[in-house]
Length: 78
Image (cartoon, rainbow, N blue to C red; front, side):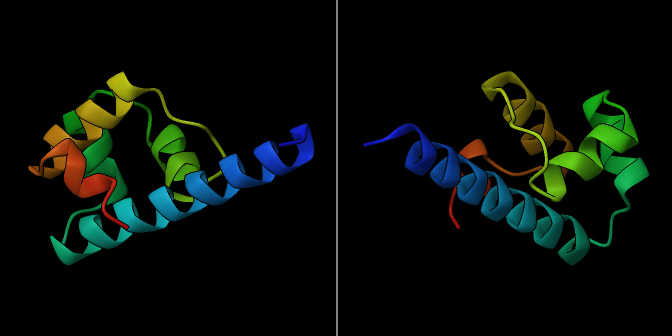
């Protein structure tokens, strides 16, 4: 697999993960600021994750899942 294809796949996954996180957050009626506060991250960074513009470490995935009161696997079920 060439580098360009790997990069495109990573971008696609980040985008889908972000869309899913945003959908869960909205379904729960929570704001970006509320989840960012609960996850102890900057609101701007959470927006970047939701837009798929920033790759996420596993530790961040765990913090966001806890803030959303879901299992980490639920965030990856898109």
